Image 1: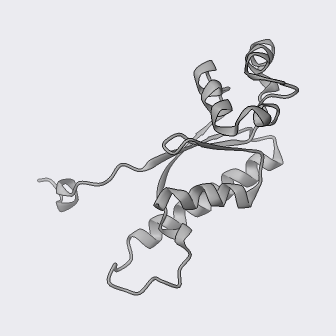
Image 2 (image 1 turned 180 degrees about the vertical axis):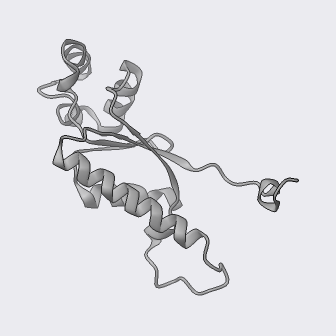
Length: 145
């Protein structure tokens, strides 16, 4: 017998990908932040919707699907991330890269040239390189809009 939940249609969640390196303290901090934010959003989503939640942080209502990977990005993923951060941000993604072609070359030479952590919102076209908590939280706040 199917549960009642199986009949409810849910909006698919935005996918947030963390390109993670567990040996990097900054990456560990970002993973912790994303897990805490995701857990808070899940808890809030199950509360009584008739209650007044106006005093709660907007971010707590923002649910997302967290994908954590230790793999290097594919060339298509890197191209997309460069598009998201803009030409001036390419060096924040790939160590020493001056432009997209240079970034692709450096990544092929050595996967460690990709600078983790990088948090990517594929659905809304945003990426944050590094562990800037306020930038990451601002990106997540946009998911609910």
